Length: 271
Image (cartoon, rainbow, N blue to C red; front, side, top):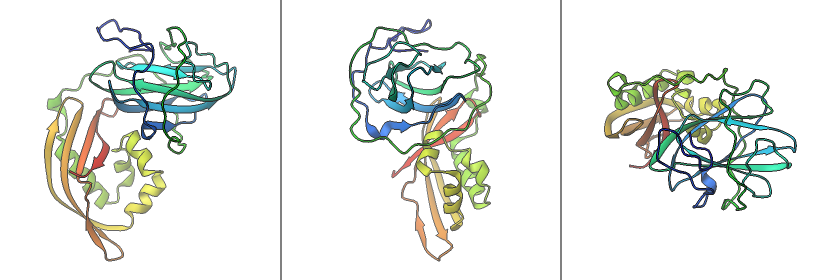
């Protein structure tokens, strides 16, 4: 785990005292924090940041934890990088996350005035460095995250690639389940990022109820690593109103979830 420049025991990578690049507004998510633990997941690179904004009052305590090898900076409303979990200002705070090197998938747990402390609470070291994150436009609409169960410090067991479902089969089974109206199951096949793009579960269910049939064609593996996969899928949608069209966002990016021990849809784009 890297916190604002600290070096982990098992790594030679190091975080700078402050970010060296800008934070794109399309990679910023507005979250609502409370005394319930919120979990965020995503993927970052050394040169591509992810951000979260939240509103807090002076006197509240910010608690967060991650077991992943990432860099984290927290900005106060006056744009100072803070080094304490005790928040002294009222307003909007920004959390900026990056990878010390390469690409990192991460899980990040946080909350305000948490009654039951997180195991191995991570505080924010390093001196205060005044700098302003370069967010170009307003962040994405506010979403809430359901509270998660009690957190333990036990590491997630390693899942070998031999035991994993093939990405192509996972994608095909997902669309078969959509054809069978198994929306609750398919909703949980989406990463937090993908769910945020879709909207609420009710919006997701409402849209797919307009689809009479999904015709599934060829599904081809393009690339696969330990924690990511890319699949191309030929899909046609036949709507209840008689219209039909081919899904032009046929390139599907997957990430591996160690929590649910399965692949998750991360994003889609044209091939």
